[in-house]
Length: 232
Image 1 (cartoon, one colour):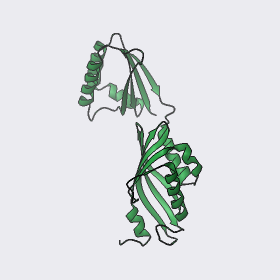
Image 2 (cartoon, rainbow, N blue to C red):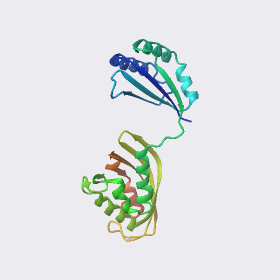
Image 3 (tube, rainbow, N blue to C red):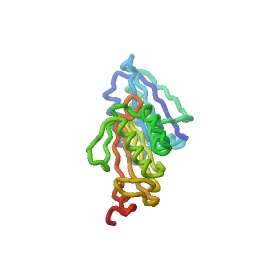
Image 4 (cartoon, one colour):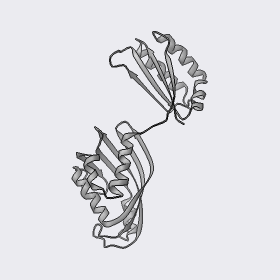
């Protein structure tokens, strides 16, 4: 179970605190078990800092705490604080990356199930699409995306398997495997009835909760070979 530790402190020495944390990161390279750290400053009190540190589990957090570098850093941190910092230990019971969930809905519901009406809900009207499989360097507009999905669904009975997904900041990266049976005209190729597979990666950039931009990298040449339209 993911474990989170929250450190609450007050200090007027933010620059010194940042240098201290940079030193700890350098000294614990290859030994620390913390996977993510974020520091926030109170919007109404510039001396009030809150650090949130994430670990794979409570046990891994204890390993991290027992590092000699962590103990030294803690002692120096206390010296920089105006008062003794407080700690809150939390077992994470719900972790929901909302942008990642939206990206999954595209692959599962819009592309996989053909629910094209959801495009207006998930994508910005001025969505910008970058696709190595297109002649244009980029296209703009959620209506263009709607046409693309309809074209692919008219040519193949397909589904996506999501192999990996990483969300950070305003971007979600999805590595996928596409499987489809060729049942309609595709780029001038008459239906072959062949079942094909294609791997790829998609990067979505979000703004205000909607997908604003997308980059598509996929093995189109491999797909064309399976359809008999390219030399192996």
